[in-house]
Amino acid sequence: MTIKDQFKNMINRGDQSPSPLKSAELSAAESEIDAITTNLERDRQTREGLGKFLKHPFKVLTEKPVNILILSLPLGLILFVGGFAMMVASNGIQVIFTSTVIDDFVIFAVLIAVVPVAILDFREQWRIKNLENSLPNFFRDLAGMNDSGMTLPNAVHIVASAEYSTLTPHIRKLDTDMSWGAGFVEAMYRFGKDLGTPLADRSVDLIAKASKAGGDISEVLRAAAKDTFEVVNLSQERSNNMLIYVIIVLVSFAVFLFVIAILVSTFLTTMATAGASAAAAGARGFMGQIDLFAYKRLFSHAAMLQGFFSGLVAGQMGEGRVIAGLKYSAVMLFIAWVTFRFFI
Image 1: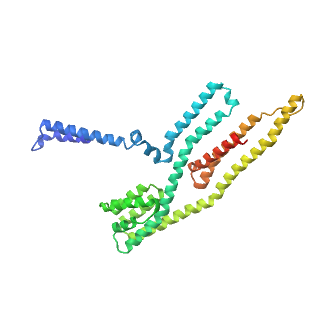
Image 2: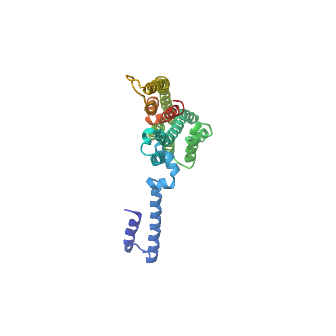
Image 3: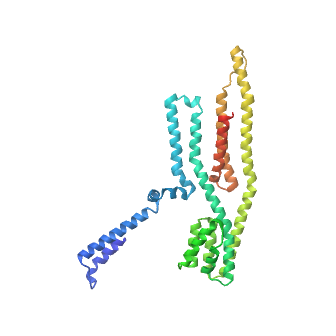
């Protein structure tokens, strides 16, 4: 039941009230309730879905790395469709088989679609890494201040004046919340939600539940510091161990490009020249003319596909996330395109 309906029910029971409202006052009150309800509904619509996007488009697009696809994917499709239509209108449908310009439109459309995602994902992971690396020190210092006899609000206030990299603004916000009277548990939940990382949520939940249970808050903070430190160390160790496999993927792509470059520039070029000379001389029994353009285009497609999907594999192996490989995919795709357009 809405606020307006509840108010009308109260009005309908006005005969039981010792001082019933006059009709003019009731109309004014209903109008005010309608205005308040409308404003609340409008505000709710701007906090989710399309309404939020229309009010804060940049914030929505950069809130999560994949959100930027709302803009980059249509831009890539527009580039490809527009370029394809322009080339076909100028040169006919046979341009698909006689020119590499169509391939160029495809490559740049893909790059326009994935590069913003790769950049935002790299920035987000860098932020998360810095936050999680600073969490153990923050919890440990907070426990030490609390052990010295300070209350938690005073301890947070002292710690907030220190430097914890990208975690510092969040600690100062926590200090502000507690200075305005928010309880430690409530303020910590807001702190974890503001950080928005899995490790922060886990640590805050541990501290909050232990605090509610009445345990020694200093010991809880030390346990949280030790837990976060071990998780960060394990993550760093995993990245270091998997780095060699990422390097292997990148080197394999470089070797693939080198082999294709040697094959095209020596063997295929020589065979194409020999085939053309033999055909001009009327010789028979030779393997025939070699379409060097078709082979180069075929190899360029192979190299670009190899670069793009090898990058995704490198991201999955190195960081455990396919989307993390988009930065490798974009770089290797561009390298393959430059190699075949300007050097082979």
